[in-house]
Length: 177
Image (tube, rainbow, N blue to C red):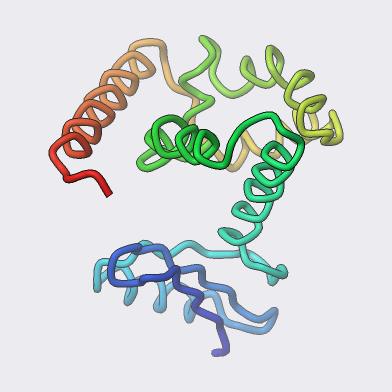
């Protein structure tokens, strides 16, 4: 019955909660905890096994490390780097995760994206090229579980564009901070 619930601060504004069971935690306990968090308006995810830093912090660490490198090496100012996130990547990622984003960024979805851009992304990130190759891609696609038909991709892109337009309109309506 042991599990860790890791919220994101401030939890009353950011709904994500990472749930991690111990190896002996019954799946029903994790499912019950997930249902409780969902019932109170949180957005729980299940981390399948313990990992230092959880998921959100590990993703944040990679992004921050690259941000510090880009600024420290003189490629961009801290202000322009922040602008890159808040006026670029962050807008899209505020309602679509990275896998859903890349599914819409290549005509053939995630597999096509990996074929087209995997080698250059590996080179940019100094990541092992096998991250975007067939074996890992097959694991990801098996869990992704959905290949969208072209008309579904077009509909999803329209949905994304409406969300982006609404988000931008909201941002413009707020006082500068």
